[in-house]
Amino acid sequence: MISKWLFSGALLLEAGSWASLWMVAPQWQQFLAFTLSHGLASALLCAAVWRLLPARYRAPLPWSPLFIFSLAFFVPVLGTLGVVAAIFPALYLPRKRDKQAWQAVGIPTLPFRAQVQLHSPTFADAGLQDVLRHAPDPDQRLAGLLATRRMPGRDAVPILKLALGDPSDDVRLLAYSMLDKQENDINLRIQLALAQLPSANAQAAGALHATLARWYWELAYLGLAQGSVLEHVLNQASEHAEQGLLAGKGGELLLLAGRIALERGDIPRAEVLLNQARASDMDEAQVLPFCAELAFEARRYHEIGGLLARLPEDMRQRPPFAALVRSWT
Image (cartoon, rainbow, N blue to C red; front, side, top):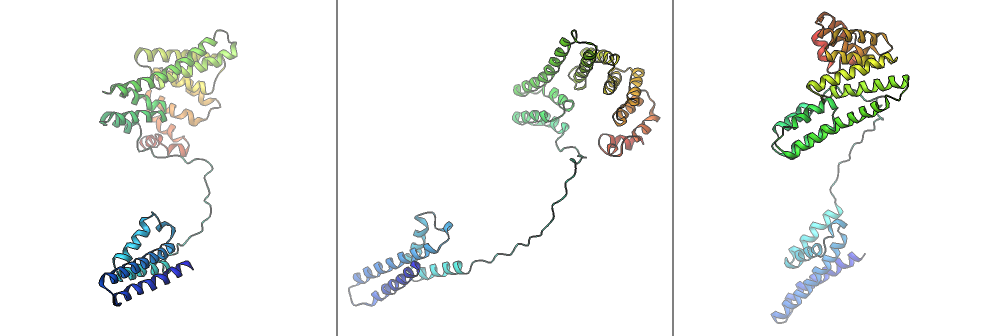
């Protein structure tokens, strides 16, 4: 309602401003009357139009109303008509929007368990090694080094060792600290188990020997021991595994002892242990890959295809077994 009165007042004042040009009076009086009447008409038109604008177009103040007033005041007739012609069609004839067609769909059924990832990530360990070798920015190499914290230890250790030769002190120190932390954590667990061993009874001693075999094997498996240290670690792992087996431990310890013997190159002992593991209540799919490795080390290549073919179907389709099955069967 107020906007209508403002528009009516603006129309009357604008008409009066033009009528003042034909009144009998000196020229300066005509100009003064025209300017005052036209200015008031522009102000009323500005107020009326500004009130009709959407909220987002009313700001910022005072520039939004000042822009409308300037158009109406400094461009006589055409400015006023232009403001009205621009504002009213936009207010009363808004742009039509296409209706969005929504399609109702049912809730998709989710798998019972996470689906197996059949493809390797884009930036696997080889990608991180390329970053450490070729990235010119030390910060980028540091970021690649920190990414190894989300990787399995066996894949991360070679990358950390590669970073020990980096020209940047920060990269070398970080790689050394990460390697040292992994090794210290394992050594601490070994020391704790060794400290409990003298006072343990026969049953507890068997469990401690199995634990020690696993942690010594972890040092070798992760690549944290090399040379004569690796030989010592494997000997300790084998000794504790045998002690655990003598104490009545079996199952996974048989498989672990077989893997240790296989790593040491003791093929006959590894074959005995792996056959015992297959004869136990262990899942055969856990043992067959190492039996295939044993057949390869023993140069019994004709057995490899049959062993791999006995793996479960889903296991044969996953890396690294998919490529092995294609090569040997």
